[in-house]
Image (tube, rainbow, N blue to C red; front, top):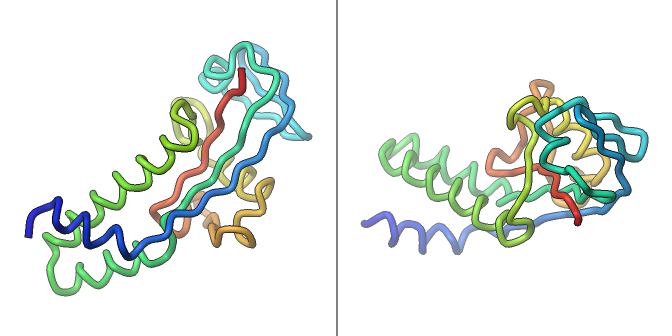
Length: 151
């Protein structure tokens, strides 16, 4: 089975979901302030330069993607690695369709801990089944949180 054939097969098992919200923001050279949240990040501030509003976004392929990778890893490790890559490409493609120019926690000096803030503000657990671990990793794994500037 080729990677493209596997990708087509896997596409039928996932149902991407997202949640977005728009907030007023204030951007200075090294921080971004919005709705009681202050983010110290020169990189994010540069990304949002000139914005008065920002969009928070969370997206996920859902738990089924994680489940498929786990099942493959028991029987066919090579297929598990390829499925992991395919699902990563899928979530990126899905996110680009929502906000092509976005900036995620973990990029540059934008602390990964802010994934939790985004998840709370968007009520991700209840609305799309996305949670954040104590180590600030997203669950399901094939998920993304991000900030996009509104110009």
